[in-house]
Amino acid sequence: MTKSKDKKKKGKPSEQQDTESKSNIIKAVVLSIFDENGPTPKIYWPYDLVEQSGLLIAMKTISLLMGDATYQDGIGTEGVNYFGILPFPDLKLNGLTYFFLIPDDEARGKALAATITVLIDEENKVFFYENMKYLRIIIDKAATQIQNNKQHSEREIIMDEIREELFEFANELKDPFSTKRQIKILLTGLDKAGKSSFMYGIRRKYSQIIKSLPTKGVERTEEKIFEEQNSQISVWDLGGQKKYRERYLEQSKVYLYNIDL
Image: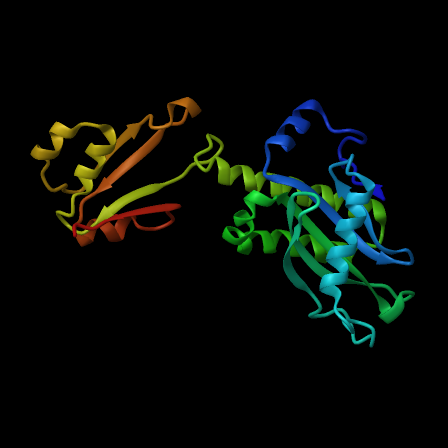
């Protein structure tokens, strides 16, 4: 097996990187290829992945997803790709695996079967189902790059990049209101639906709810809602009239629509 090395700094990861990886939901990332030795974990993280664990991941992902005559007729690699979620009870992990083919004129069928597998703790498997759309994009992009790069060193860089991208994606899910991002939140709804009263409730200014009148125009305030994260949120409370809604409803990241039932 070949360990994936950091593209900027060879060798073991720093203590900070090690701490970040341990707290991340992603527990392993493995590139496996069916070569002359059979299913083999070629590039993998963590760097100290037990050899038997790597072999188990390679054999299970390739053998289960390859099927009986996937590419033996040499009809090409286009369209031969599959996603699957596989359990690894011996490792107490679940894996999201992408099966694809790498063109190789010297290989049987003119292609090598390969998989990229992302593993998480088995109790967190809902993570795959909730974020499948985005994970597929990240993994599919890496697979395409691997197909187009023959050099092992280039594939190491690609696997480092996918690991970093997966880490960043998972961390954003854990901390969506990070100070590194600016998020526009609009609280809108029909006229007199109770939007301002809702905001008073969040601020715990319950006595103001009784005296609240319909908002005309826009009321802008700044709230330190997540003080433990040193975050400051600007809140735009829009009036329910149509002329206000149409003006401000563009390019927002989060929409809160209030309806009085």
